[in-house]
Length: 209
Image 1 (cartoon, rainbow, N blue to C red):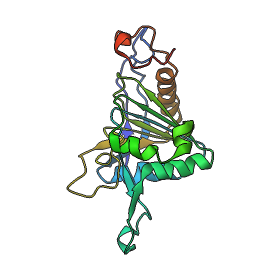
Image 2 (spheres, rainbow, N blue to C red; image 1 turned 90 degrees about the vertical axis):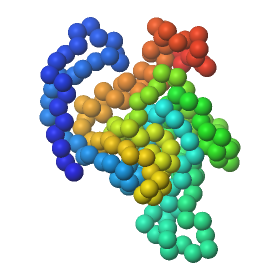
Image 3 (tube, rainbow, N blue to C red; image 1 turned 60 degrees about the vertical axis):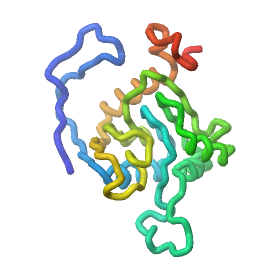
């Protein structure tokens, strides 16, 4: 679905880098809900060529279809695999993988990543910041997802109707939005907000150290 998104009709003067409101302008977006998160966002990730940046509050074990669109035809075999298996394949092709998160990843996620030495060794870069609550996915610097879905099976995974969260988001290839969100992501990632953070003493590892 195509839509036109307009930012609030105001500017914020002397705002901090992460406290902004951009001038209004037309932006072409796709509105996605429910299963479309999996079909649109996860599919884009699986087709990445250069980079996948993910920002999320929660990180849990997530399953994806082993053979998308043909899961029910695979008799005698498990039709789903961990998304980490697919990310490991992307890493093998040289795709840069960043995961920015707030909470400690779930036990199933930690157990699964331990099975992938390449990811555990740094091919999947993880950075934890307790203040992160944004949910974003940026693929190849060319596709942007912004919405409610965390990096979980109920949010972005292959769970079916009746089990999936009610999620809502947008997908766009708008270059200015991509530039802005990537700059914000990178500022958090590199510790640009750490010096003035009031939660620094509670942080498990400030990014600027």
